[in-house]
Image (cartoon, rainbow, N blue to C red; front, top):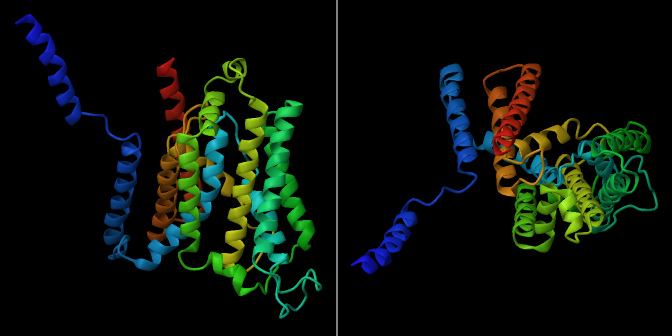
Length: 341
């Protein structure tokens, strides 16, 4: 009889765990997203007597905003997992946007930047914009790994330099008259499709490849990662290069969407990307972060921005509230990490 009991107990336990397994890790933040959407829906009927969620144009605007921020946030998430930070992505958007736009001008341009390089195939300006982002990201990683400069300082320097380069490159003037082939990647649902493809690629990379395993290991304990034989400097440079490349892609998509490249583009986008990652569960202490959570975090930011605009909250008040949300998310993350210790 005792043998029978011993054999049956594990069976009962396995059946029980089949029904009481843990919920997906992003369930909590997803519920928060739904709750925020419903709150703005109720406020919409109360304040403006109309629906917030059932307006196709508004939803399209939210999705497009989320796509640009989301592309950057995918790269920023990987940086944060390694205990780093990237403050340069917003300025890289401006720099890559003006570079790409200058090579996408048509023969109809009134004052083209490069008269001998008009009507180029769309692949050239797209590649140039992403390439500039990759180079800047590589410089960030090189400075951090080879000189020992903290990521905050290195990327802060790049943030200032890239914005200055964008302004110098254009002399403060917008770059317009862009080819249809180039602007097509920013029209309709293309930005969203690009964002989702990027998110899927790096979700798989972080979860199912050696690259992802090493990135989490570096963020979890950099010293232990070095001792275990991981080339930490190589992977850190790779992470920052990817982040720069994705910022370049976001700049190209944004320029294509508005049919213009401007040195004022991307202001504060780096903060939105960091906020999306942290709200989505990435820990500034390193070693923790998921692309799926970042995606939901970006949607939450989009909902908040569009929702406050919908009910008539002043843009300055929106910035104050956004700042409070970022601080609250970081405070929760710090408290969660203290409990683990």
